[in-house]
Image 1 (cartoon, helix red, strand yellow):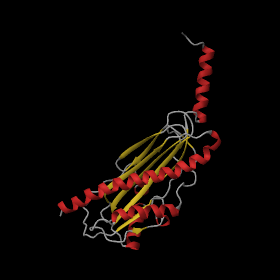
Image 2 (tube, helix red, strand yellow; image 1 turned 180 degrees about the vertical axis):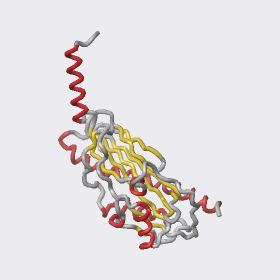
Image 3 (cartoon, helix red, strand yellow; image 1 turned 90 degrees about the vertical axis):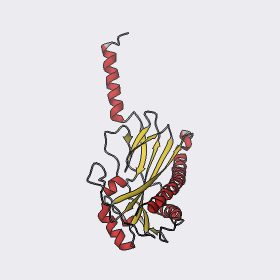
Image 4 (spheres, rainbow, N blue to C red; image 1 turned 30 degrees about the vertical axis):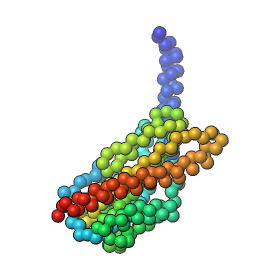
Length: 251
């Protein structure tokens, strides 16, 4: 059945207003990115051909990369301004300590692991910033942690794409749900070579009513970080074992 011209015009106007108003969906998002920290002026990471030289036990540091500003407009989602980080500096340091304990289980890693406060990493600091940290802390290897947490609060196409050093990670959500990804990229600073990486994910389905939505979203944000961190530590343990085997087999 043909739709009358006036009705078609009305539908087009409504659809246009929805696009302008962000009717597809809205999300509150906090995130950081190893890619934008290490390669702020490039479209994609640059892989170096330099072979890293490691002499066990290696000195390792660990740190969170700086948070980012809101994404550019024109994405699939209507991104709201970045809110305050749901994870405090104290919580970051506690999480770094927990992750670093997994490194110290291996004899080829020097103890203790250097836990580096966030203020020593500058946004877009790249390897120049890592060279400064290397001089300050005497580390040759650094584990860089980043995260992406999105809380979907409206109906629509609930997906979000987060770019890691090895490609895209697609987050799928539901109304009032919280999706969290954490990523650890371990780099050899002198050679600019990534040695390995380990991700951690969490997806918490929304179940709150409008009355307690804000409180529930805050609780889900903290729970999402804990679940993603636990998953990351499990994957990191696997990658460390593989890295140990590679060190034994390669000169």
